[in-house]
Image (cartoon, rainbow, N blue to C red; front, side, top):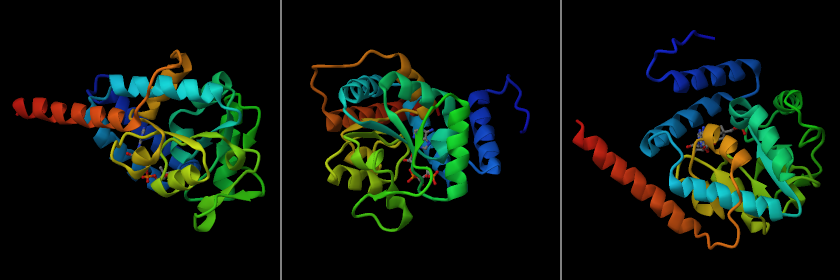
Length: 242
Ligand code: PTJ
């Protein structure tokens, strides 16, 4: 791992990049995961690299919905495992949600490595390993493969850093879909019932501590509009500094 001096103005961001590169070398994160992360960083810039109010509201609502669910499942991919392994295990324990490894670039070897990593961080059971026994309808290829006891029968699914097709297919199965995605105009963000527009490295720790938002109206489209307004305002502010 390249040494990053703590004095570097982008220390945190560079450290995160380095740890992702290391996870790619270990075979946990896909190479495409690095590209996905770069896209996310760009949107994080527009947020101001902080959790904005609309994101905090979505995080609280997500906690409420997951706590009330009968069979909630958190879907884990290579980026989630690299960025917040211990935190996602803590969140699943707080919310009594199952953890299932579900990959876009599926390989048995990577699934097992991710499951081992999460177990080292305290996860008792990981779904999605071994032979898949269910398929998400309407999705081509191996992206559809999942666990009957996990994602297939879940009523609420948290799918961080997801691709739009799978989020849509899960919605079509009648599930409540929650995402964490820095891009407020991604298909996933527009498809989900609750879209948390925040960096997963902030969102998951927040969700371990935040109180649920219950009994209050939550309008995902309105929340996404507020996020886009925030980004536009920030761009206008930035243009004054040039
Ligand atoms: O491990 P695999 O094989 O399942 O692959 C995972 C990736 C992420 C490569 C795969 O799902 C993929 O290609 O995803 P997309 O379609 O690029 O979507 C990822 C979304 O996550 C994009 O909208 C990014 O802006 C967003 N994103 C990237 N980094 C972060 C993020 N959102 C929150 N926090 C981040 N750190």
